[in-house]
Image (cartoon, rainbow, N blue to C red; front, side, top):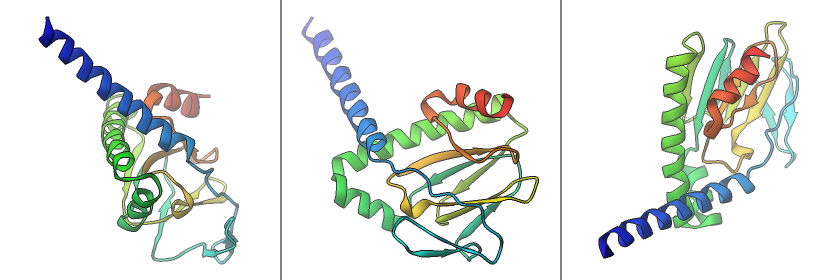
Length: 174
């Protein structure tokens, strides 16, 4: 009986830690910064720092896509400093499994959607069918990881990796 209680207690503790980590990361995320731009334009972020529309740090998406991003080392260090090593470790663990699950779902149910992994770029440039462009500055996000989905008709959307099936269906089919 004591062994069963101990296993259940450990499971409950792990579940609580996972949920707490997820809440910390979700409650501290900032909205993506978006603006329609031309190739030669610059945009102003909320911190008034100009970001060129095209730099060596820009990742261009011009296909129907799922774009996974993870924080670079500098962003990860800022996250650790702000939220602590425990929150970082828990969030990093959640990111790994949510991204793994989302990739599997995409490959099995949405093979026509290109999957991109962005690890070192901090600027995403999405190009719609009509030529309109949307820039997302990942350096302004508080998230360690995430997923944007894009069909070239609508603006890119941050997908809910916990409910990836619903996110994909709602965005791509409606």
